[in-house]
Amino acid sequence: MRVPVYEELKITKFDVMNVLDQMKKSRAGQVPCYINLNSLDDKETEHALQVIEDVLKMIKTSAFFPYPVYIISNLHGLETQLAIIESSDKLPKHFMRPIKRLTSKELSLLNKAVTLTNRITNTPLQQRLRELHQGTRHHKTLFKLSKELDFYQGIIEKIRKRKNH
Image (cartoon, rainbow, N blue to C red; front, side, top):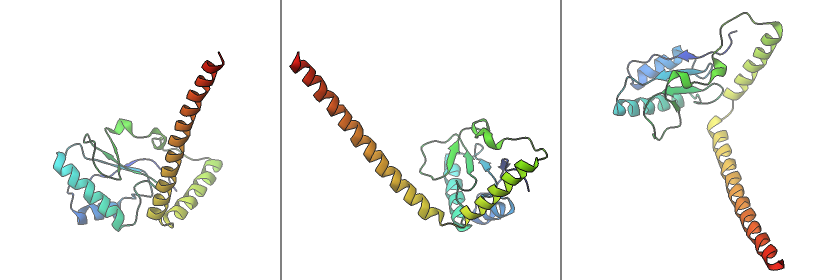
């Protein structure tokens, strides 16, 4: 059993079958991985992102759970569900660990993480993500209304103070 560290997916041809083969050969979704698209132009990058999203849906793997799939690209503002970052230096550091022999406590924690990973892959992730986004929308609405209420209460307090003076 290995500690999850980044794995680079080196994909040269971005057609569905090639990306599908590469994803199946790699352990995308089972370990954190990234794909570097900096060598592609804007149109090729957009096409590659679409193909990657389609392949992840085909193999029923989430781009975020249990382990993320990062895209390294200079292109910003695209409509995609993938996490896009500028360079490999910006990858989250917690998956950049030197490989070493694990202690028994670390090994038991890793076994627990593997069990949880398997449970996550057995749940309907798209449905859970929709529920999560819907819940966050409600929280954002509540926050905006609370902020507005606080603003109006502050105004009323100031009016009362001036009225009493």
